[in-house]
Image (cartoon, rainbow, N blue to C red; front, side, top):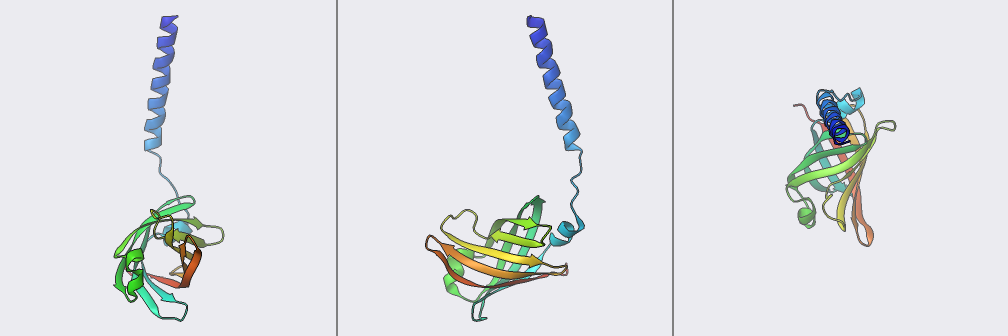
Length: 152
């Protein structure tokens, strides 16, 4: 009986190891849409009156259907009240809907009650949509988010 258990454990470990080695070599394929979406964008955020709030770089890096992650960097901050929210940049988390060519991003994923959310449509060379500042009281400010693909 001990021999059967030992043999079973060895077979299980070998199968697991073989399976893991096979997965390591697999290539993950993405659609042309996702490949064109990933990259660097120059973004502008404006308030509801069209006044600039911030300009910088938006860079989606990883797509694991439907999740996207990446980072953003603020080059110019025109409105100091957004300094604590945007700072000089950081990591973001969101989702990408390939079928409808739409994206949703949380620029402050580590904060639960003071966020900047981006909702945008994706075209070949640009992201166009809105941003919302959301707190425990709900959406308190919003405006326009535009981003143009950088020529790297």
